[in-house]
Image (cartoon, rainbow, N blue to C red; front, side):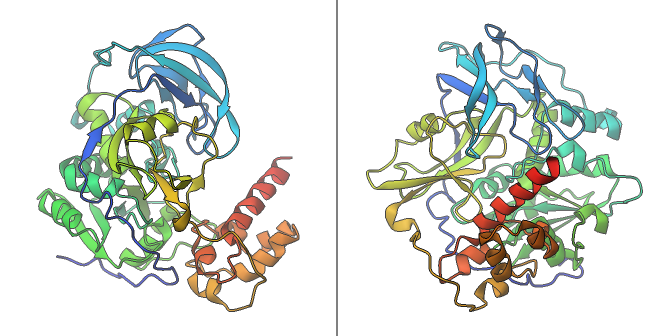
Length: 443
């Protein structure tokens, strides 16, 4: 197997327990439609979508209910047929409240989408393909939910020479990308082919951690013979899947502070996002459902499920047999970067990669102790920051000094918190500081 030129070892990072055995061999299945769908207008990076429906309207699966509000925004579509019962504030997975469209799902509906024209992407120009992807509401499915059409439209002064597909899935517990590569490898390659046409590049690299040999084999066996695609196994280390880390590992290119991958000639896309691009041009349906890993020792039947976007957490857990008696904490995403949930009515968003149900024995002690200046956080930081200094500044709200010490380069990966023997919640402190700075700048 060919190795990408310039591949290097990831600096920093940590080795948390993988904990993927619960679902890594579990085939993807579809969950039953719930009684109600809740679709927040804010579920992607950029501006929230603008609602275009009213209470009492009937919608069918795939109908647009909110349109993009600007270039860095994304439309939202009904993920089930039913009647709109309310448009109001609803609990959001980030802990706030957000405007959301509530749909009462028709109990006896076949949930068949309206007949729609499925254009042949081969006959479309790159601009038309990108427009179709934007109209379908496709965003990054690796967690950040950045609108995909924006990534596919780099400025002309920043030419792209390589597409990197991210199949690392380095977060503990999660197996969404893993099962996508094993079960839908042809769809991944079709999506990659469409991306390469959009951007006009001829080279792609697929980075997959070595703990997924079946995914490596499936993607390698289905590489199209007419494309220059290299499948590169990489070292199992967190956060190998962070795009800047992966570019450094595969290509030996460092993305400068404050810059983006396109500044070094690269676009990185998650494998599930690429498979969704292919699905748009296979079915004509927009992004209305996604694969979600439901796992942890606190859920009775761990699974990889195809879930309608907007499904409430309680309905998803019920589809997996419910939680165990010793269930203690529920996290959206992985345990390193995920968000703990306080309400079972929060809906799953486009960017929800997984739901991890932890028992009390799984959860780290919440008691914190003074910093002992051990330096473990400095060794763990993959972007070479000083978490010890930033943590001290955060505790006294000296946010401007944190910004001067490159706080905005922090990707909130959680390596510093994981490595800290004093159990100081460094990553959470940095997230609060970033939000405070954004609020001050907006004011």
